[in-house]
Length: 177
Image (tube, rainbow, N blue to C red; front, side, top):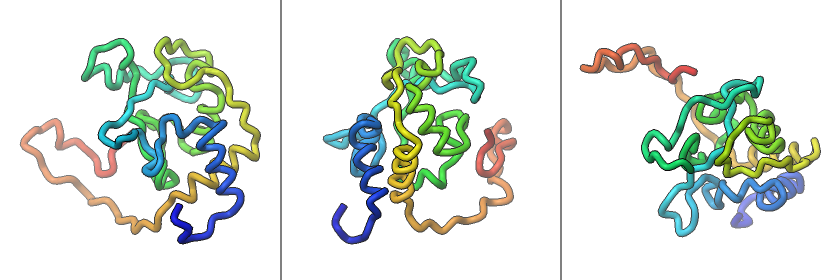
């Protein structure tokens, strides 16, 4: 963004798709590419129709933000995460249903849960297909990968510290899906 480094034409095309026809930027706001919207004091929640699994037969049973704010529009709503370093943050979605960014892009391209014929009355993602080509999806991925940083990955601890809450002592380092 500050002309301090080179990016390929493919990355530039991916950014232009992200900001326009692919509609990614309607939820993932620049410069952090997450749901923190201008004036950068609050984060959005979106309803995408995330499935329970990749058979797309059922909507995820997780009610999301609704468990905190019992308004109908918050049912199955989740905070919009950042796509920075997304290559390193799999699995994707709140329930880890998608194992690759290609699967995520295909899901959005199809129109989310509604596009996959799930009943999601309050879906905030448009339910119609974006009709992205294979090459456009590749360009989107190139842009998303351009937001990766050089990260030093550490091995997780062998165990977590004990807790006075006995139920927490069954937790596993790194979580579990």
